[in-house]
Image (cartoon, rainbow, N blue to C red; front, top):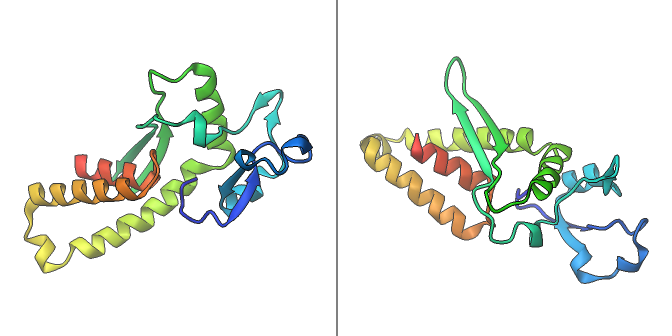
Length: 167
């Protein structure tokens, strides 16, 4: 989910189904408590794989997240996936199931609302209000670049800051 709270380890291939991979290091992936609770030992749904192995399947892939922000009648944020041209339809289908099963669109939007509230508080200072739109956009672009240097590709907050800078 990329919330930065991966305090647990999950068996990507469930140990109840694949006991031979129980101690295989590449089968142990960092995961947050919320995702681990949603994933449990599920691996397939109706014969289709539910989760992407993000450490290999998404390596080198960027720009997967689209963020839509509307301001009227009230602030609304939504996240969706964008299929890269280099990704096969089958891999993208797994990624879409992963995104849905972990409820990432809703969870990202909830975190984004909190982030926007913090940004509003930060940018409503007299010093920030004097920046003007162009400098504010540059500051948001720099914040997105700084966050991208700290986070894995396709991070929800980087996508949010990039979208805010663009709008």
